[in-house]
Length: 151
Image 1 (cartoon, rainbow, N blue to C red):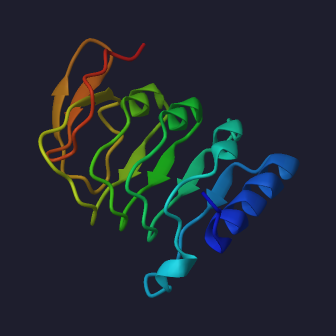
Image 2: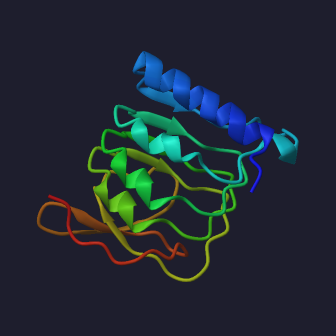
């Protein structure tokens, strides 16, 4: 599959972040950007940015996220709002530093349940159920595989 311009630009931003050791990466688009400017998939190189603390993927056309997103274990803020996501990867449960997760304006189907830090949600309207050292966060409408407790 040929990579479009949005994908190539994202790869360039990722390469720059790798070179500089950046802790924040913005791959978002403006809300009124043309669809051709929006990402439909994430470059594989994104998972190499293990130092990232903030990742903004808002206002794209992402329909799924790679399991490798769970390798970004230093993430504190993840903005996935205004995409076309119907499911979340189980690996999000590995993001133990996550404090803010934006999921608004996506296309959820079914029921969801993923283990993660209880404080790791901003605008997803979750139901929180505390457990020993983590919480099962139920994002209504987001199907993900059941993940075990973090720790």
